[in-house]
Image 1 (cartoon, helix red, strand yellow):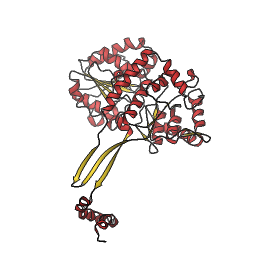
Image 2 (cartoon, rainbow, N blue to C red; image 1 turned 120 degrees about the vertical axis):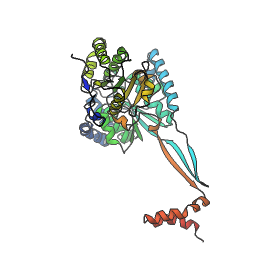
Image 3 (spheres, rainbow, N blue to C red; image 1 turned 30 degrees about the horizontal axis):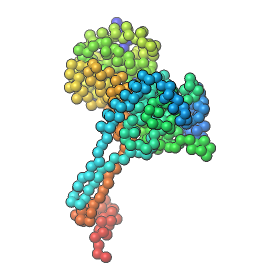
Image 4 (cartoon, rainbow, N blue to C red; image 1 turned 180 degrees about the horizontal axis):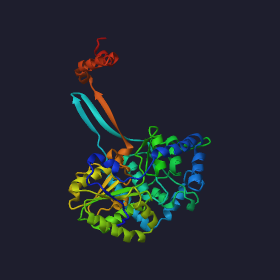
Length: 440
């Protein structure tokens, strides 16, 4: 039987080999790095003019100005569909509540009598927030980036999004409106590697500073955005090299194939390279999902894009022996979005080590997290959820340790400190203590 989703039978594969056998997008960040290097260098050398040139080259339009005017931002909000405005305001409220809960608290610990170490959390001063604008428009990404930074206490927020040919070279009006709702007034019509370089190195127009450099860059994008973020990492902090979206659904024979098929399609409509993966021990469910896909895909608006994504090498059905192996496979895949549609979804979730975000049960589809759940949809892709986290308050704050010892506390540790300094052949380290207790 020919199926839309190719099938991989991993029932006899040992856990150690699962990572390399999972369906994944063929993304070559290294090759993209060679392509973006001259673009970044051009922005460093020529500033705003280079960013505008790259917009004209890659987006097909030259923005009238790199920085968006307050009037254009206000006009976008005034023209926003009231239903969309209500939805964005709801998304902002929910995201602010969930992200506020992420804030760590300072703590002061007494190590010895009179000797303390305090853990402080300090927000970075300035951030650059990237919002993609290719096949779709993402005001929800404005919410995800901005709310997390605002809750963290960042003083200066700058947003960049590609210039839109349909809007005379301005940023898409829905993105501008979302910025207005969030009180963000610094918005740039800049996309791709040029926008990332602008944030990292700043951009001038002659002697005029158009955009100041930032401390941290966050936000999703295509492979060229990911490559540019890798190139400037170290000059600035980055959240992650977020790439093309992906969903994995871990399901048993209790799952509703209609829900599973609809959820696989939802991520496939993002991009022809999007990954949609079903992990199941049930051949009957896989057959039923395939039947649903054949019925639903032709009826969806972006049918060609969806079909390309579902039939690509990055998508498929992974057949496993049982739920135990399903958990192993899921951890090996380390999905950006993981839905668990099993009899005991909460119990299964506690065995998941690697996932960007987890959606439990039949009533928690991924698009809930994309928009209104309160969680953040900027998540690690390509298996990086093994070591990376989704975007949150932590991306915009630094941990600083503050050490304060009084005379008696230092004196109590003088002997051990000098002994360690001498053992490392760093006697001047020990002298910093000894000199404080010498007679004058």
